Amino acid sequence: MQEKSEGTFIVFEGIDGTGKSTQIELLARALRRFGHEVVVTREPTEGIYGQKIRELYQKRSTVSPDEELDLFIQDRHEHIDTLIGPSLAAGKIVLCDRYFLSTAAYQGAAGCSPAAIIDRHRFAPAPDLAIIIEASPRTCIRRITEKRGDQLNDFEQLESLKKVDSIFKEMDLPYIERIDGSAAEEEVHRQVLGLIDKLLPHLTLSPPREPQ
Image 1 (cartoon, rainbow, N blue to C red):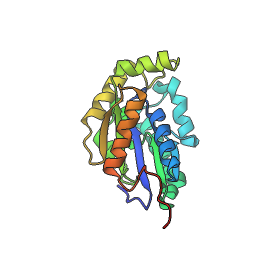
Image 2: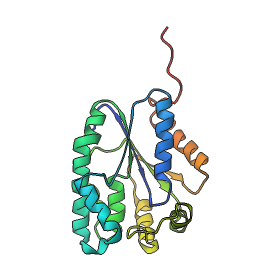
Image 3: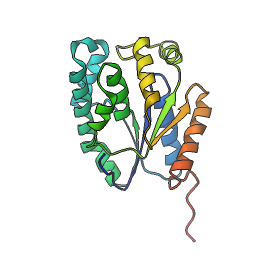
């Protein structure tokens, strides 16, 4: 993996419906409240390749797993070059909704090798912390369809999510931490803050001290 610069890089991972986006916003709000400069971003991006990926949500079968994987990697190259890399170099905290672990899980479930996918990301800065939020695929589908009122896209089908969930569970990297996403939103947020305090103590959530 590429060495990152002065900033702090935290990614949120997990299958669709675990509450990643909500928890990123809650963490960003907490960090900003105490003076930290935070960049919130997500993948797929809104860039050229990210838009092509989003088009696959309703027509995933039109590309091969390898073609799909290439789109995710191209999108990530662009994301790192234009936003993640410069933000870290400027000393900011970057919170990203999905990163290469999601690619390893989702494209791994489609038939690619998860280990090979991770190996192809030597160009990518490794996160300081990857929080995998865990909840059962059935719970996540219920949240997507009942709570959000959304239709399932091609990446959110139950059998596919079961495979993705299994791959996430097998991941064992030093920066990965897991939390229970089936709990109430406030409890999940408490777990997230606990990981920040434990693993990245320089990201204090205490108010800044007044100069003496």
